[in-house]
Length: 400
Picture 1: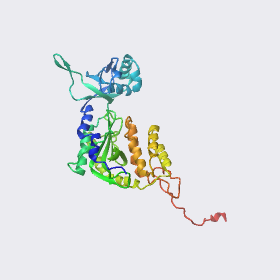
Picture 2: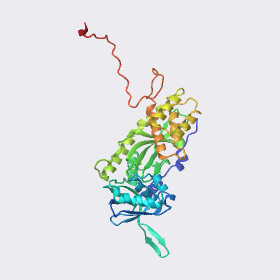
Picture 3: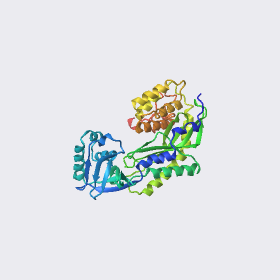
Picture 4: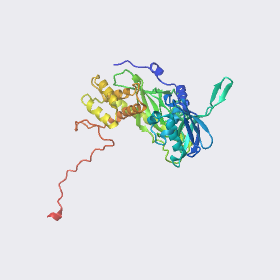
């Protein structure tokens, strides 16, 4: 059995609330300017922009029909082209002059009857000179459809922390999982509450401690819906899982709303998700008592196929399971979620693995039973067939 792990031994790997706020503040607060497509919209793009990082200011500018002028980040320039159908990789391969001509062609008329929005950082910009600082054009961090209203990640974090402390106590510590991703297109942050924990028994770790938390997904430019789900974090190996059943409906942008509706939805969602996590921890505990020694390959194949796990991660999980004697469904869950800790994974792969890990606690009992020894996973929402009624066949009198 492995030794127990105290929270103090892993907290250096986690993000403090101050660090979370600092990382989110790279893209906030935002100022918004909506402008129509027309002759007054003009881009200028100089060579070398594609060699810089996403949020670096590049030698590219946008003049809007209303007379505003913005310097662009690399990310904003790419999104301008992507919004009218130019793949990002293609934009970075062609000459700067060709990209400039294409953007001006689209935004001066061929983009159709549309409005676009520039999102810039609210902090004033200056250029240092020997004679003092000179005001600079605002820096456009992103461009998006004119109908998009950004949902502030800083405000969502405030709400989540506030509701966590309303439930667990005003002095409840909140930390961020290091599996954190953030840019203007998508933010994935996972909050954990070490003071609200449970020891899972019957595993390979002494005092195998898990704690509750929240998984929050958002997109400042509206590409992905805002979503709040339950999150569980294991101190040993810093594994985690996203519970898609302990979640609330994502916020739909396809209806009329104002930002007050978004903040109300976020507060209600955090409350509802936290209330559902005790049942999820019960499910995790049950996994430790579900042996799968003879069905490991079958169970893994079903999970991999159903959830589209990438081949590289499949191989890692299979290799790690081969070293485990008398495996249980709990072991399968741990090896799946431990794969999400590997360096170099995309946020998409991390989200996929954490979601799959959360699903395993429900999949453990959703397999063929002893009367059907194939042990394959049952289809989602499967219901057993009704028992056949053993009664004599009634003959149709008309046939006599």
